[in-house]
Amino acid sequence: MEKGCRQVATDGSVLVLNGPNLNMLGVREPHIYGSMTLDDLESACHERAEQLGLSVDFRQSNHEGELVSWIQQARTEHDGIVINAGAYSHTSVAIMDALILAELPVVEVHLSNIYKREAFRHHSYISAVAKGMICGFGPTGYLLALEAMTQLLDRD
Image (cartoon, rainbow, N blue to C red; front, side, top):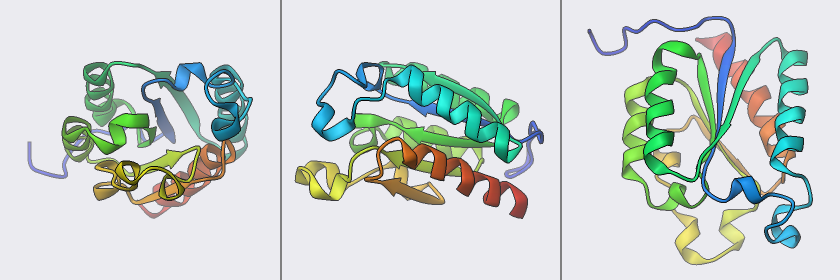
């Protein structure tokens, strides 16, 4: 198959991926990540997606390989990817490579402002392939990412 030629869902289907430890939202360092749980965040994303005319497939894994497999599947099942890869953002060339392979628009999200945190968090492999990154706005960042994805899909 020629590069750039792929089947897409074309129905505004967005894969929202969450990496390690995001299943602990609401419990893990609420002074940094807030009190909203991952289930609450998923509900908010579904509600906003419906308003925007998108559909959302919302997933979380603590396992890098599972995230890579889901990104590979997205190539033919979704129109775009919103990803908060958590700590893998700063370490995973495998996730970056899978995002390149998917050939879909990508919006990176972080609940906290990674540039106000430890220096090792200032670099993201995801940013190298994402159309843009939203960080520091807590759960609202996911809703902003869905709005951005709507714009990206309208352009494509």
